[in-house]
Structure formats: C-alpha cells, structure tokens
Image (tube, rainbow, N blue to C red; front, side, top):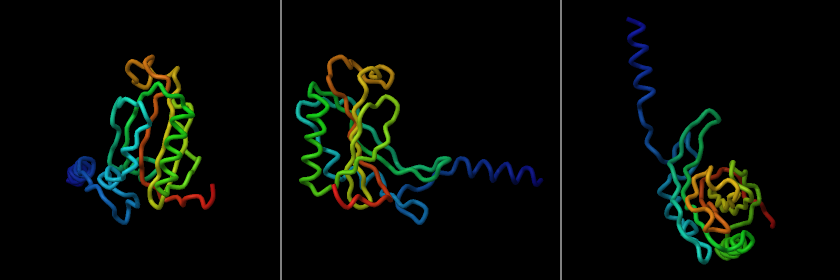
Length: 160
C-alpha cells in the first residue's frame, strides 16, 4: 500500500507543470516580458535571420535558470562592425556595457549589456563550428551571431 502511494506521488511530481512567471522561487522575468523588450528587435545592418531562440525559465540541477529570447543572424559584416552596432545602440538606449558573458561551445567572442533585471548577450559563433551548431549555409556569412535577452539577478556594473 505504501509503495503504491509513493508511486502515485512520484508520477504526479514528475509530470506536473509549473506555471511560468515571477514567484518567490523565480526571481526572473517571464518569457513574455523578455519578448516585449525593444532591444530584441535590434538587427545589425545587412543581417539575415537564421532562427529565433527562446524558452521559459526552468529548474535544473544548478538551480533556477532564466527565460531567454532572441535571434541568430548571419551577415557578411565583420565581427567588429556587428559589435560596434550593438554597443552604439545599447548605450543610446541606456543599457550599461557588461563584458561578462560566458561563451557556449561553438562561440568565439561575446559581449553583454545590462539594466535592472535584464541582460542582453551578443555572441559571435566560431566559423569552424558552424556545421556543428546547426548553421545552415554557413559559408554565405562572414559573421553569425546570437543576440538574446535574459533575466538576471546580478547588479549592473557602475562604470564602463
């Protein structure tokens, strides 16, 4: 009898979905808030949309992870020009530069900008890794970049 109760409780716990959104256990803004942020629509000149990326926040073994939303683009513009465009636009919009992004496998360079509760991450993919990370027709582009916003609980730096 006790075993059957344990089995039912385990089944319910493993299949129940949590409702996304801020709560006492989720300090991050939900996906809908991130999608409404104007910077997610910034696109460096002459860029082509490759794919949209995003997900609601979730819990994993290291704790709560923020929702994120953004896009992957390809362009025949150089890395430095892509960075310069985003840096100019984010500073103009009042976001603070923050050079702390952790690169994922397949990424060569990264930069970030923040404002309270939000962090925008720009990452340039390594050309040698295009096929491995699913960049179709990678040889068409000089630069492929991932531009996304996510929630954060970290403080923005006070100076550039």
